[in-house]
Length: 424
Ligand SMILES: [Zn+2]
Image 1 (cartoon, rainbow, N blue to C red):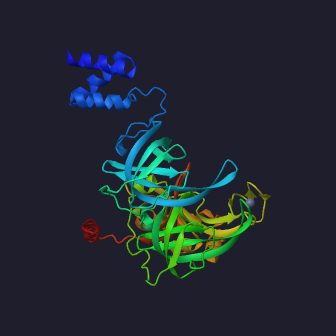
Image 2 (image 1 turned 120 degrees about the vertical axis):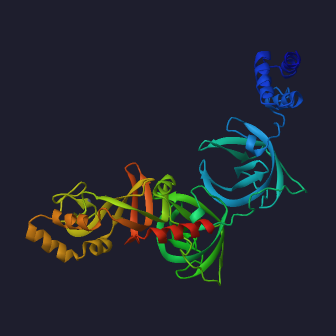
């Protein structure tokens, strides 16, 4: 039969085991791949007789690249290209990171040489290394990569350039462009890798939400109350949430326009929010199921400000605790649950009294648990809309509330709001 003969020919051509080739061929043909195309595909797979692997590896579509490939030749259009300085084996390197696309998909790349990549250019990278990152393949463009720029531009469905909204940014994003309002900004002196250095840190906001930032080389345009356009920023995780990093390679320009911060902030399902691993600014709506222990009137260590039990701090031993108010409550919307943490002000509001009132109530009852009990009676079983910072760790998800209000309990209004969201 033909398949058998073709397999034999191929196996001797490529110098590989006949049974293996035959099995592969059979597989492809069963998936309705025409025999000639199947043979071509196997020639590519087995390297077309190239024994040492020193020749240009086979061309692949982006979607075909897997972490098992050691190197590939790939043609694509550069979607983003961002410079970043990293310390590698003891010295500083400037690398370029970004995303490449063809008609079949997108792939992240890191260029270790300055190839002069910029968004919108179509390139062929010959002998690009492939490495695995987080289960996905990534391209390494280095010394042994031959890079050529093509005249003809590829048509891809993806957006060229890194324009993004804060709510869409995720840890690992590179070369992003954002237009934001500087909501908070402070100058700090830190111990950097080359000694003491000044940085800016604070919070950016745009229509979609807010994110914290660090500016490693203070840009004069970044000041509280101003609006800026930032090109070539990258996103890294810090304390459980994504953070915008503005580096020496970022371009910062002051903007004239006002930015309407948070006007488009989306409400998320708790399950989806928790699955992101951390969101700086999120709104959820759910039922308050329980007020956890350690709520109401509590005492904190004067040294480390952690909550203490019976005057004992785990780190500082016997201490004279500071009285405080807080709530840790479980909020559930059917898709997931978070522990909502209310600070002293929000706690006073749901308690309906001040810290003084709480101390007085505890003294009269000779039990400080009465404060938590009062709060429990007021909030358990009701539906709340909570906005704040969500972080996830090994113990679960915490939502540090900035806004905590009873959700309007009108199902018709909620349905209308939902439809508007769907329409938009
Ligand atoms: Zn302490």
